[in-house]
Image 1: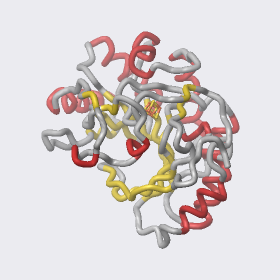
Image 2: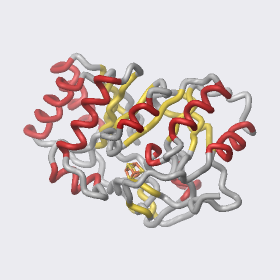
Image 3: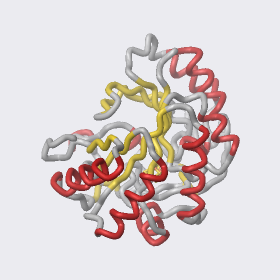
Amino acid sequence: MSSNQTTNFCSVYGPVSSWRYGRSLGIDPIGTVSTCSFNCVYCQLGEIEVKTGDRAIYVPTEKILEDLKAFAPWDVDVITLSGSGEPTLALNLKEILQEIKQLTHRPLSVLTNATTLNDPDVCEALTFADRISVKLDAVSDDQLRRVSRPHPPISLDQLWQGIVRFRQQYRGEVGIQTMLLTPWDEATQAEYIRRMQELQPDEIQLNTPTRPKPLKHEFEGRGDHSNASDRPYPVRVLKQVSPEVLHAFARKIQDRTGILVRCAPTPAGVSG
Ligand code: SF4
């Protein structure tokens, strides 16, 4: 058993309702100790406990398969690797994806912060997924340091090179997920649009925080705790942009790039 597990740990959770992908069964290849190469200011897990870019087997593949069998017949639209940190830090990522596909025959999706996309082993493992959602919340080093807070440090150039190379090689669907906490100025918007023109993702998803951030690591943050009654722990309300700002930026990106842009439903109930 890896150090990231306790005896009661279940590596499968949900299904949760995804505004974009329908019913999604979550797979957590990281475990009970939140572990990530970012420490995003809005992270629903709370403050990341282990900030690292080291890949390791955090949850054995056999444990994930055993947990997953209890959810048969997997009546969901997608199975998503996400969970308690950055899923591509799992050294057994390729084996996990292969085995889940073989067992369930469901579409597989992976959420990533892109910090590992310069690693050929990670890119090869991801070819076994049908869809990759890449987080990109910054278009400058300063923004990256303030919002994503990478550890170990990575420059925006390094991050971007990995994303572009991955996009060129990968045959599945690539979505870019971007979180706005405050409205972006004209120059930042223009730089984002320029990068999207270069990258040509299949779609862009714009979000603003809809849930408050736990003050410390809350394991249950990996699921969908949109209702206050589901959160018996202290939280901090995050800054967010209005639906009007989110939708105006979405329209601008779509007009200039021709790429489909979707907005997450906001607390006011407006969806893209
Ligand atoms: S990349 Fe995801 S798991 Fe990591 S800190 Fe950011 S929001 Fe949390």
